[in-house]
Length: 390
Image: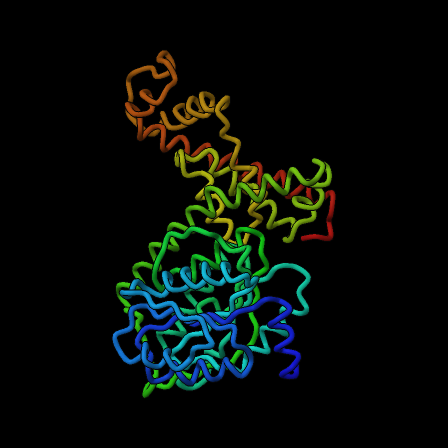
């Protein structure tokens, strides 16, 4: 795109450039000057800087500056900037870090990519993390983040930690859990949960140790990120995946759902059979309250069909629980010395508590047996329907 085309796109799409900054006096002016070559739609959030940042910003009366009295973290600065951008009527906010690692001349990469999108999209700059000079901790942290983003959303990206991003302001959440670096993980995951497309676009990156000031605190911030990912994974397993499953089911007839999402879903007949077997095993196992969590987690880990495994895990529906308890206690009885006749007692959780070992042994025998039977039966059935999908 030519300069005039980029400027026209910025104006037409109502894009602003948001620059959060904290004590980046060495690079801030260069970043602002680079952005001004494309647009004056700039919002700088000065997050309580104690260096000469305020003096530098005073030289730019044509841009919007928000001075926060104290440093509260990058996430808080971004949230403040997003609110201001919406108040000013912008539809998109292009965020760029003020530490000099991002090149303002990559702005056309984002505007051009946006031109080809027919629906709302969140674009994330894809840095070349294998180039010389990239800190190893940054490369490792990015791979770590990419994995959990995929786990939580099903979207595969090459870079999820770049701060060079284009946000659709009317599609991102309004409230957040986190105020600091981990905010940039939370916002892309929760935006993806809203069915917004999230994509990478290629950008350049510069890590100059003489200029760059990093405020990332490895132990403390990595701990916060880990806690956030634990929370997001839990929400994914207990709410997002079941929600998507139900919504997908509602959109289709039962026959179409079985055909498209079960029988013709990705994976061989063998994979589908293993998925059913896994679901049945967990459904009959004694991990009450954690069946869905275990089913989805193990399905992802072993690359099985999550839908089939989830459906199969529901074999332990409430009406069948007394039968499952009785069968488990019966199968476990030969392995423990128990003189009392458990079947003359009421089948309830008190009975399980008093005969816990017997129940656990029996439930694993039951789960293993029925898992094997259902897996074999499923494979034979699918193989008869579609013998070429092995």
